[in-house]
Image (cartoon, rainbow, N blue to C red; front, side, top):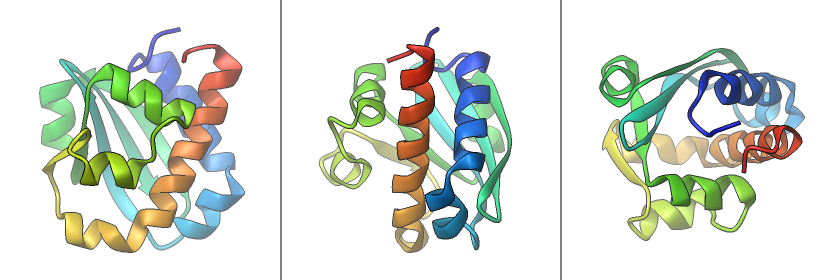
Length: 130
């Protein structure tokens, strides 16, 4: 299975919804989060500590529908999902860009974002996608 395909998006959404850490840290967060790699994207609809839906979309559609967007190379996404890179360090180091959204308002949800990537890591490992 490849990153940024619908099968990955579905698995990530399920794992995020089942994550006790995300349920706790994301309980007050409602957003449409876009993840972009080149021409591909995933739109995650997050609400109240769960993932309501996930769609694999072209990057332009993902950006258009998302409230906040993280953009990176596929290699950087692999490093994030495998745990070789942390999201905060990747954003601060310029490996992950935020082409849409307010980075300052996202700061309150750093723990939720970390929990989201931990859940994605578990889902991807079980599916052999990283």
